[in-house]
Every structure is written in structure tokens, then in C-alpha cells.
Image (cartoon, rainbow, N blue to C red; front, side, top):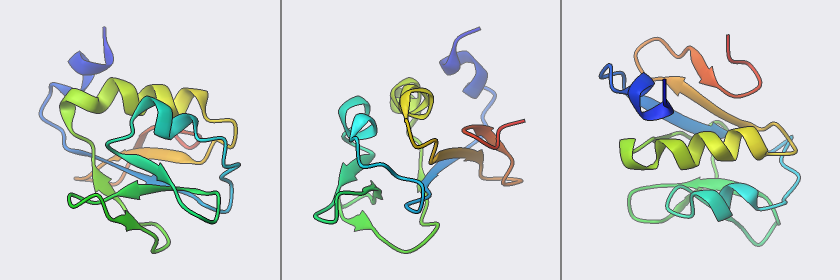
Length: 100
């Protein structure tokens, strides 16, 4: 089953980055530049709808279905294991270091 098929169940997902664990490698921004960006401090942040970096601790953004595979690849390749994707409904992590 593909990542796209898993999410097709209609569950809204959101992503956030734990900057305390971010290594600044920028892999996430390479995979999904529409969702992630490195800031001047060298850490990755999620981007809001207006491309503004959301720097508040634990800031989340929705994961657009067309970008889900790219976001999940970012999670898998992140050396800092700092990217978390969870269901909006119950806040259960589905991709990331705390995924069940």
C-alpha cells in the first residue's frame, strides 16, 4: 500500500518540526520545499499558507495530499529525526520518531 493510499481514508494530517532536534541538513526542504524551509538560524521550519515560516514551538501545518509522499520521505531521511506527522483528529503520530 502506498503512502497516498494510506491517507486516502480521509484523515487530515499535519506536520511539525522539533527544532531542538533539527540538525539543519535541509533534506526536508529538498524533498518538500512547499512545506519546509531553512531559516537564517540554520534550522528547518514548516511554512504557512502564505509561505511564512512558523517559528512558534510546535507550530503545525496541514499536509497537502499531493505532497504527502514528499513529506513522508523527509521524515524517513531526516538525520535529526525531528519531523512529526500526525492525524489532526486525535493527534496520533503516524510518521516520525514517535509513530506507533
